[in-house]
Image 1 (cartoon, rainbow, N blue to C red):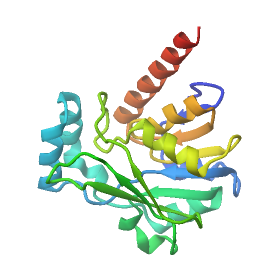
Image 2 (cartoon, one colour; image 1 turned 60 degrees about the horizontal axis):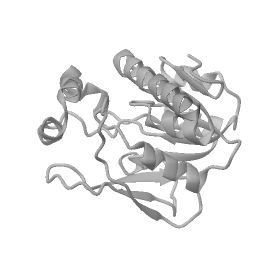
Image 3 (cartoon, helix red, strand yellow; image 1 turned 180 degrees about the vertical axis):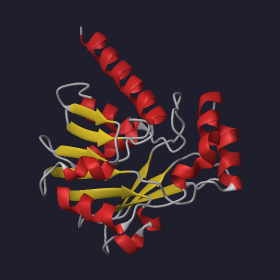
Image 4 (cartoon, helix red, strand yellow; image 1 turned 45 degrees about the vertical axis):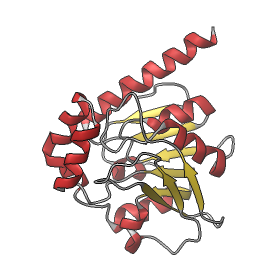
Length: 217
């Protein structure tokens, strides 16, 4: 689905999406795949504690089966084929499929819940020094269990992308990256396999696009 002339979102398997593109088509892939730690009792309890009713329902959906396994080597081979640079959230859980890097991105969530991690790590292909970003993880609107703030994606685009770059996201989730790309004028191609998350993300993105048009009048 083409939401704007620069934002294209599809409901499909990410391997099918990437197979359509030639080598190095995307300048930067920013992805947030499953960390393989879902389904734990502590994790579900934390979600129930901090989440609204909609997110509680999504947390119970399938017992968080979607987060039981990390992507395999074939996925990473394709990701590296179609993109020039990559940022992989949770890369510390997938290190066997990633090269050594000097540039980890450390996100301080600034929200302290004993049963949940206070930071998240992203592996990157860049040769810059590792960086720390402090952005509060609290959000008024949450439609996905692992939803990240739009401000976090804007920070990544500020630091690691340049105008004109084509951005790829293989695990759209809540669509936060799409909101950031829209606001900053980046071209984004993304997909989400889960139909319920896909529909919720598309609705969120369309609402955001409509609101920005309204304020621009």
